[in-house]
Length: 304
Length: 251
Ligand code: HEM
Ligand code: HEM
Ligand code: SF4
Ligand code: SF4
Ligand code: FES
Image (cartoon, helix red, strand yellow):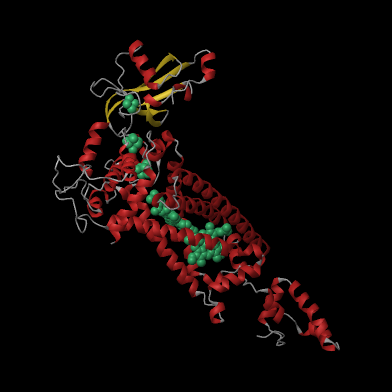
């Protein structure tokens, strides 16, 4: 790219002489960043479904495997989605990396400048570069697992991954990195493109920055609670590593064993005792419940 | 800005310790070093007054620039406690008694606190062609075309830039990438883009700033916005130009 431009007749030119590429790259850098940041918000809510219980998380997981559309889970859908996100991520990282200090001299110049200036937004940029760099490795691992083992995503599988597979330290660091990076990124998008500027751009900027911190804190708290929830599941389930989760309603329909049904069969009014049988089935420990699934009783109480 | 702190008049004057980064590139024997001067603070003293006092009474070789001492000429910009600012507009009582002064980075050093911003500003102006481009012939006997007062004011708002260089010195991008045009350059383009007498199209402006040394190099760190002593709306102008230039690039 030439540094100097020589324009004798600068007025009224239909197209620029210069390459349009820098404009496009800048646009896509922001567009991919925006996509990823919004994706992360949704992702956080979906993953946090574990806080509402194992069944809730199971439902979300099966939803993304297309169960609610096809009546049967297709984990390959998660693989495809993760591959798509991965592609956007690589594009984003590639575009944003152009802004990294290109060599040690630039890096140390920037650090010196940053220490001397003591300027919030300049510091934030450094955090963004640092977290971006760190995420490149961490997200790659996460997405690779999501792509190759989508069928393991359920409360037990994810809990096992956290505890027995030792993923929790990585998730913890990734969580910190992504929540800082994404909210700073969104703040930067707003000031970069002049969104929500209004009459007083500086007043808006102060509010944006407050909102940015609020968003960071909110998602960090939610993320840490979520992480704790998965770790608890993983700890409780440590002795049954690799076991798939069975939602309570499937246990309800399939758990009743022949013995359990005896009193119901003897009773004159089976309808009234049936609920208590179902209740006790829910209490049954997970391994028993899944055993029951492996050997269906043949007594189909439910619809399907 | 020149209100005297009422409590200051009663209290005994402070003793200021002013450390200055000294270096004379003309003298091969000179090595950059910090030199600390002590000085009794006077009421409503600015750094400009303090520096003149030092030069007059302590060290006549001390180099620094000033012309207007009223924040208009832009020549007294320097790094004050790590941040770029105008010496003539900085009251010492707003600072702690230990003050560190350094020349603006990025620009060619003349000596001590004096830098050649003019040279850089001139080459920037030539590179960005910051003058009105028009093919109309001018008839100086005719009245000029009228301009709406709002538009004239909007142009004037950007025209207020005094080319002090603070924005460039505060810009992390400029520190890393020498050819970056800086906020002062982008503000210039925004100013001529507003001017109806300038007939350049957005495509022509794209040729001037549509690359990573121009608008797309800016990483929105907003150091420029936060140090500009004239409070120019740099953030808004850069964002505005970015939208316009991306539009050219995507078309
Ligand atoms: C994984 C590798 C990643 C790297 C190396 C990376 C790097 C960067 C860097 C260096 C910037 C600053 C660009 C600039 O100053 O112009 C940036 C901006 C941004 N990043 Fe990332 N990032 C990564 C992942 C992510 C993720 C996962 C998200 C979303 C959660 C995200 C969201 C954003 C946003 C919204 C911006 C602002 C875009 C802009 O300024 O145009 N990034 N990224
Ligand atoms: C389509 C792509 C993705 C899928 C399907 C997915 C799925 C999941 C799942 C199922 C979990 C729960 C733990 C586990 O089972 O391992 C999880 C946790 C997590 N994911 Fe993702 N993820 C995706 C993309 C991303 C990306 C791009 C990032 C970051 C930039 C990310 C960051 C995290 C973090 C930080 C956690 C831990 C959250 C917490 O415990 O609070 N994920 N993800
Ligand atoms: S934009 Fe502001 S900081 Fe930059 S040169 Fe002009 S007056 Fe100085
Ligand atoms: S916004 Fe930042 S990168 Fe852009 S010109 Fe201003 S200080 Fe430099
Ligand atoms: S002396 Fe002119 S701006 Fe300070």
